[in-house]
Image (cartoon, rainbow, N blue to C red; front, side):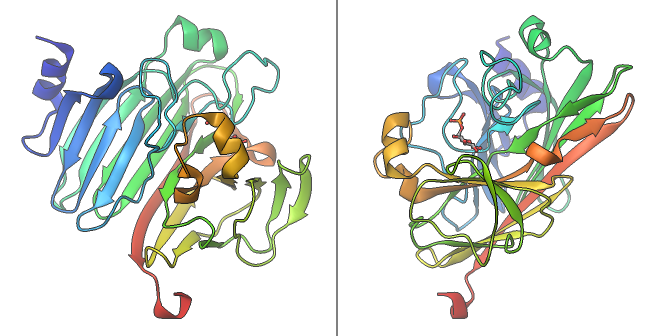
Length: 306
Ligand code: BG6
């Protein structure tokens, strides 16, 4: 039996959860239920697409994404863990940690009575991950795929010393035109402006985009709403257990240098990342667990905002 046969045998659900070989030879899971379809690759536990039935994709995946062993995928929902951004001491370690390129095992799949599909994945630890993260820990991700997309990232401290993590669900949302959207829910919050030397500023009003934007909003609790008048929809981003919100769009010049954003890709995406970063790192005591939970849904944009 091949690995894919074994996965289908153990975790496949006829017509609803199917394991396949995907782009770049990666193993992918295709999920199709009455309410949505989605694709996840086991490398990185990386959700690459999610679209509620009848709607165009909510999650953006770059047409120029490099998909293959060991590569981080531009778009979807990269999992940043156990640090966010550059490693605090080791500049040779990958930005945003190693979970987004490491392999994840499938632990469970289920078709719920309500019509959702559940998938549970667990980060595979090996000598490479242990050389970068010497703590005894377990990272599990629960995905609920349906009309809403829910992702719970659960870190358990299985050792006998405390540790502190940085993390993010670095979600790329699909938008009609980044120049036209507005993000609500962050007004009044303090942020670290990474495109202005890390100066701390305070947000007034909604976030809009006309240049490179790279901000860590700290101590955020409210839902973020991405209002998109071109697609006529509002994306709700709710989180629990995450105190930071990162808002990122590289804009044209940086995007051109990145090489995997595609032509004008920066106009079709915005990252609104639910995170624990900067001032909000999460300390986890031995035996404890910490949960970063997000839930995304869409609704038509109220007429007043069009
Ligand atoms: C964001 C960071 O979360 O991710 C940015 O705030 C960074 O500084 C961006 O450029 C993309 O990171 P990467 O490693 O996927 O290119």
